[in-house]
Image (cartoon, rainbow, N blue to C red):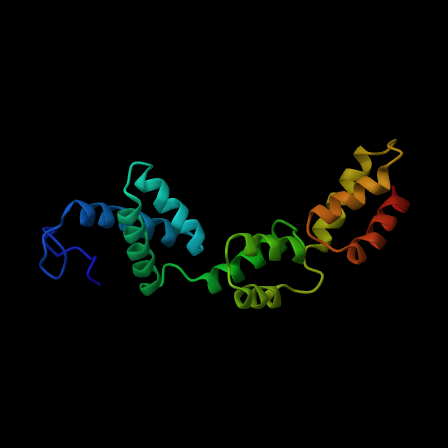
Length: 180
């Protein structure tokens, strides 16, 4: 791609000397490649990181051009893939963080992920995933709320805030309350 450095570091690989914008672009591109190599990022997250790198003093037209060129390069090189990101995000949030489908879907939509990518990511989540983590969290919360007259309400609110539907959590909350 035209933004790659020449082997001797003197300019771009097409022989052009590196100007101020090109040098800035290459520096930010290298930094974004290193970050994307460590973990998955969506396009929105990378756009925010690039904007922070550019700082508030950049001319909007130049900044927009630099951001678009960096994003295009990262996509072409396979560093950014919203489909791959959404699937990894859904798996991690479901199994590790114990989030429900609603919260995962909402978080992906807030990051600007396409509906088709979100639907595919939701297919990756196993039915009942995160329910065991939720049950343990509800048991711990129920112990803290032992004498609270609004205990059931608070447990339901807690479970719903984790992204599960009322139908999924109402029986579990009743079960936890019976045991505690």
